[in-house]
Image (cartoon, rainbow, N blue to C red):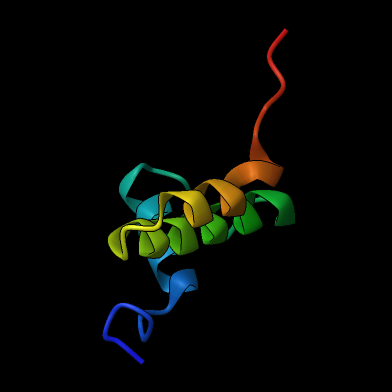
Length: 65
């Protein structure tokens, strides 16, 4: 297991949210899951795996009209 894989994606997601001013303590479960997925996607990007990061974030895409 590499050092990148040992990183906790939930902690990364919560840190990203905190840095952007989002308080996950009061957030809805779907919002928390989205930020945790973002943490996982950042780890995938650090490994150079854009395809995996895109797959992780696919359920959270907003449909624009």
